Length: 113
Length: 113
Image (tube, rainbow over all chains, first blue to last red; front, side):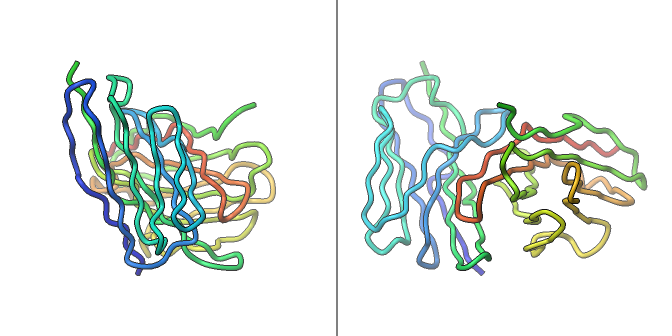
């Protein structure tokens, strides 16, 4: 079945440092979605990438979708303590009315103030 | 503008009892998904439903677990004869379509004594 691998599993940074998490799929995806889950909270949708090579920015966050639509990355510039949480990528694959979203295991980001 | 509503937030059951978890999707959403999450782990897909139909239950254990999304009322995830290993956070999400982002509820934390 479809697999979505995410690395690293954990990342600890000093406030102000940059952070990147990478996501790789075993198959070509229809789209990729990114979610953030704060400790004790629920996943919150951040963004969706659909096109090959797409790049989207949200303030300090930059999301990329690979040319082959099999990998993606999330880069945070100058981390802040509010960035703490687990970042999940989720790859969508399928067609018609039968799609499946597969989540990676996430990257837990901790930020030292 | 209510989001996805899950109840109860916390549920304690003794081994052998039944657990019923409820989920009301966001207004206008007819696609519902259930996930299970263990501490510091990713989201494991369980089942995908539309009104009165199970679309994909490939992540559901074959025994003791069932889900429904009736024409009227919330979606229900039912676990019969619970065991200690069923202790987890169960998240419900909804979307407006199979390729659209998912919006998550606050989850139900199930504890088995």
